[in-house]
Amino acid sequence: MVTAGRSNAATALAVALALLGSTAWAAAAPYQPKPAAGGAPSVPAGPLDIVMLGAKGDGKTDATQAVMKAWKNACGATGTQKIVIPPGNFLVGALELSGPCTSSIIIRLDGNLLGTGDLTAYKKNWIEVMRVDNFTINGHGTIDGQGPLVWEKNQCSKHYDCKILPNSLVLDYVNNATIRGITLKNAKFFHLNLFKCKTVLVENVEITAPGNSPNTDGIHMGDSEDVTIKATNIGVGDDCISIGPGTKHVKIHGSRCGPGHGISVGSLGRYKDEKDVEDIQVTNCTIKGATNGLRIKSYEDSKSALRATRFVYDDVKMDNVSYPIVIDQKYCPNNICAKAPGASKVVVADIVFKNIVGTSATPEAVTLNCVNNVPCQGLQLVNVNLKYTGTNNKTMAVCKNAVGTSVNVVKELACL
Image (cartoon, rainbow, N blue to C red; front, side, top):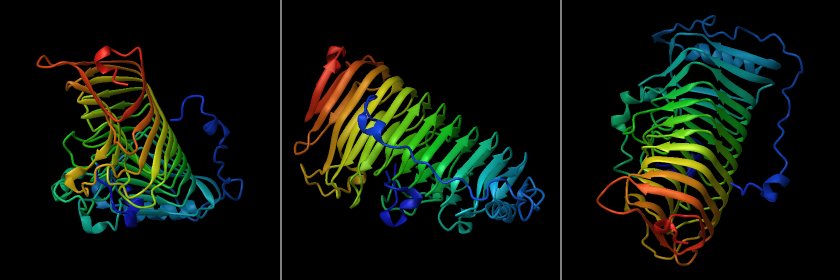
């Protein structure tokens, strides 16, 4: 995964859980957004159905202004307002859906939104929701970034500080959001990006792009808290889910990943002033045909002093995953690091891998590659049983500067 610089953090931060009984999490009061002003719904200034505002679902006519008018009408009303995108194919350019609003807004998506292939139509992202409380998008429709039209213009594999293409759906400073039932498809860059968000539910969502599509992360989040991902299927060309700096209280449950690069925390430490990542739970998930399974990655020459701590990975099934369990404190894509061994400032501690079973596509089923100046501490491998599917080698664990315990782990993986 590639991330943008800090100056463009809202676009794609950092290109790149608590133990179940954590008292720290239990003591933290959940975020309670203010209710939408005005109580009962008022009559909006104009229609909320984009077809009534002139949109044509023919896949050719630009519907951008119709969507923006519907947003303006809904945002300026009170109570709960529902924007309707009916069945049809609606071609749209950049949508800047800004608040604050005096209403709670639901976007009912039963049609398909198609992102234009004209990159001059975008300032940064495609659909960007900013500074809004109480926001929902649901339905049976699709947000189709039409990435195949522009993926050849992605130069991030050659230049790490590349110009990134527009992300599909971005939530910035959004509190109390729900994304349910929809499909995100073929993003030009990330499919869903959360920045500075609180209390977000992603449920029953399909996210799909070819396994070789560039930088098409499924869900990326940074500086966000109280994010829940449930019953969601993700198959993309980069991280299925990536958790960036400053993120805490994340629950990922009953979801599937693959193809892709797995469920990742990081990369951490690339920029100054990054914040800790705390309290991550990944439970009852399946990862299939991915290059990585459960991965934590940080720069060896990190610019920030931060902690990645209190993660629980429990009941995760691996199906032909190349590297099922990875902690890499020496992450260095494209050889951009300063090559300063032992200079890491990122602490990785109190990480539990429990009931992790299945198959590995490489012999190296467990990789704990930690640095000597801040070794990984408090690691637990509990009921871990991973088998290499090939015949030319044996299943193995590679562990350096990793401190912890192994309980009921097959002997070739019991490196703690």
